[in-house]
Length: 163
Ligand code: MG
Image (cartoon, rainbow, N blue to C red; front, side, top):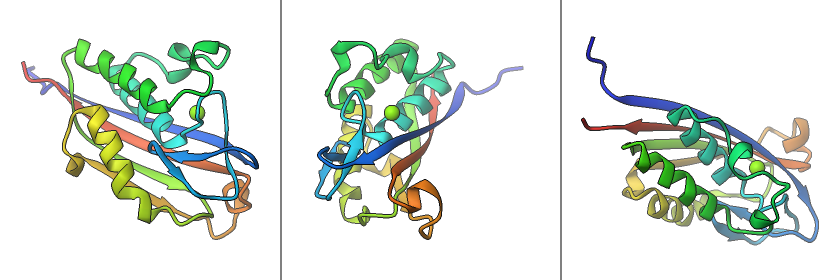
């Protein structure tokens, strides 16, 4: 049977919110009293996208390629990790059809930054911004995201190969 060469992947990431760190999501430095703690810039949205793409490729997860024990990745922009993942996507002959994502954060309001996030991500993925969707929600103050202890990101990605 000749199945179309399309692959789906999903990703999930959480980072703790702490004082004295920048809040970077989708490569955008968002003004806030707290930021995300992590080895890189802790961009949970971009990490979830990396995992969605790696999942669609069927090649494991972000921890296998960019371990938080490697000083090479300390403090770096996660967009560079995404760039590296995209290199793997292209190496296998795939292109991104679309991605969708949800950021779960009680604060701050993220919608004003969606346009810039989409621009950053679309540019790394090599697609028009219309193929990148970003959503955000609070949890009505429930759970760790609701208590502003951390930020969650979910992503799905669809890859296609024309052969
Ligand atoms: Mg992460």
